[in-house]
Length: 231
Ligand code: MN
Image (cartoon, rainbow, N blue to C red; front, side, top):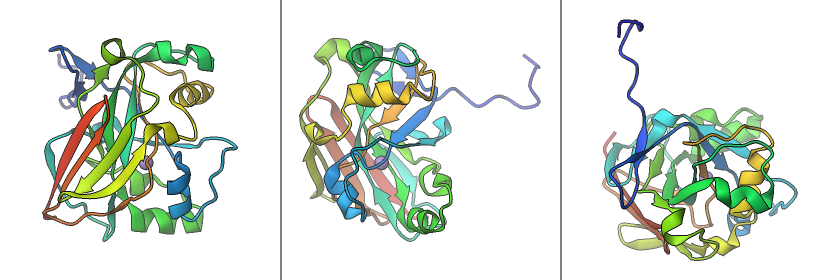
């Protein structure tokens, strides 16, 4: 009980539908540019060569329905609506045709981004951390267990700001499919139960301002919302 010089932080966890038990978060991985239209809007050719990844701190995870303050150190705070994969069974070098059996379930996520910082870091060849790994910057809705509704491979994904649709696509537009992402990421990490993978955002990303209400939905996965307050 007195093994620590201060009380260890509380374990971050996510609500799971149809149960009182919660999903304990281990790590948060994110896939970059996984929809062709988004790659183009960010100034890149859609590159089907290899996926790439960045990470967020588990402590950045925050539940759908929360209010967050507009973050410091940005004047261009962006929404990215994403399908989140929740890993339930660990493994390395997972073959694509075995990948689905490692997935506990799915959720809606918002990969909140300091876009101005991301672009300037990118231009200088610096890591993206402070543009992506933001306090309260990994928003997540309730996890829907795959044993309830299976593994979605298609379905509308949309996001609105103050009831105006900004992002509207389909998860069948993912350049790297869910099994391909899980398989590829497991070449670099031993995936563990509790890992979350934000699978990338469709086109239509944009800025939010204090007072804005973000809402989003993925067909047969769930919904998400976030209110932005004054700094
Ligand atoms: Mn993203």
